[in-house]
Structure formats: C-alpha cells, structure tokens
Length: 335
Image 1 (cartoon, rainbow, N blue to C red):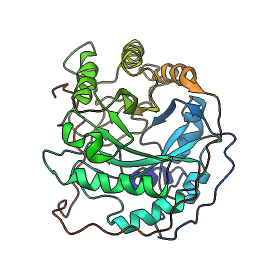
Image 2: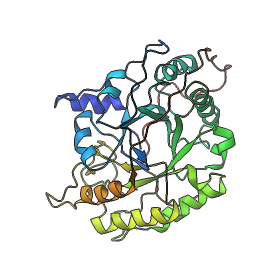
Image 3: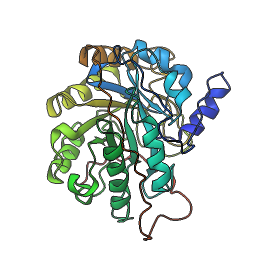
C-alpha cells in the first residue's frame, strides 16, 4: 500500500529530509546521466521511505526507491539507486497528476533519465467498485510506453477481481501482489495466502514474469486503525521469502511493505525491526535476501522520447471528487 509521498516528506522534513513535487510541464528538462553504476538483477524497494532513510536502506541492499517526479529527489538517490516514481491513485481515488496531458509532459521530462526505472500508476485498483479505472490505467501505461520505452508501467494489485485488469486491458508491464499472511488471529503465518493470490493472477492472464512479490514487513500493534496484521518473526519472514522464491524465482523487483509508518495502517514496520526494543531483526533478514538477489551493475541505454503531445481522453465517467481513503491491506486469500 502506497502512501502519498508528500505526507512522508512532510514528516521527514522535521528531521531535515525533504522530498517535494515538481510537475511543471516542460518536456525534456531531465538530462541523461551516466548509467555505469546502476544496479541490475532483481531490484529491491521498501515503500513509504523518507529520503533521510535511503542511505541506511541502501546498506541493506535496497536499490530501488519510491520517489517523486522531481529532478532533485532523483538526483539525491544513493549511488546506483533507481527510482520508481509515484504518480498513481489508490483504489478508486484521484490520480496524483489528474490530466493525461500533464502526465505525458511529466513522463517526457524523465524519459531520458536512466535512473528512472518505472512509474507506479495505481495502488490496489478495484475494478468492481470503479470499472473505469481499467481505462485510466491503460491510458497512462500507453503514455509511458510511447514516450519512455524501456521504463516500466507498474500497479500493485490485491485480492479484488483481477481479470478486468488483465495485461491486454491495462497494458501494464509489471504488477505487485500483496498477500499478507501473518495475522493477529493466528500464531503462524498462512503461506497458502501467497499461493492463492498468485494462482488468482495466473487465472487473470498475468504471466509469472510480470509478478512483483510484496513481502509483509509490517504489523498493526501501534497504529491508529484496525489491528488485523502482526509483524512476522525473523523465521516467519524467511518462510515468506522462500515461498515467493519458489513461485516467482526471478522477479524484476520485489517490494517490502512497509519501511515507514502509516498512522492508520502500519506500525511497527521494517524501519523499527532491527532486533532492538523487543522486535525481531527483520532488517538482517532482508539484507541477506537483497544482497543474494542483486545482480552486478549494468548500464541502461537511453532512448530519445517522442515529442508529440498526448491528448486528454474523451469525457467519461470518472472517480469521485475526493479520493477514496487508503484501504485496509488485503490478505484474505479469497479470489
């Protein structure tokens, strides 16, 4: 589950770490940078991370960072790090960049920056509640492919209906799957929930190479909302990683949810779980996983983007005026 990065940046600014938005439509502003030090192999991202924590996370093997579409934010990434730019919506809410023309100009600004790995277009879209979300995701994925070939169009899915979001309907390159198997109502973790959601994606037409595993690195013992999930132990997290390794052995990247706190949904999180204060040392578990799965650095070729403007879509039914609240993480394993 993705948090609006402006909120993360606001909290981080108290400690001197600030990340901001810059969405001025000036195509081609971001110049290409040398790519020799960029990470390859399976990349690793931990969501909801303040900019001030990135250096620490890089030492744990994280090399993909959720970032704003902002030149300064991307330039401040750790050496070799790449950016997954949050420009999406949550469930049926509004998109961060509402119009397609403004989104296209933003994509064109970063199309030649090889540090930009991809675009996070939607978090847990629910086509049952808002069928129009499928077309809106597809329009944005097509813009990424048109102006920034090689960069990825990504959305994170949960156990709501997936078939309407099939590849031919959304044109996504990669999808996250977020079964959270460790619940407060059981001492163990239900690893079958992972199998169930992967099979659901199989039935919806997503090949395994498109799947991005989402690992549970959060609990709900100090958050303000519901208390349905608990932080896994170190051994339980290893079991989660092993199950994912069996199902999706070579993903393009993987996600740890969550690094930072979310007041309503996630506390404690991976940022806390360093073996102190009575919490398990999940950071060491993830460091071992990340460094094992990270390949050697590789150069990423750049491509000149098209300069043709993207039109706004024809008027159609759209999302409500106010964005839907971030939903409770879905992990029931029910298709």
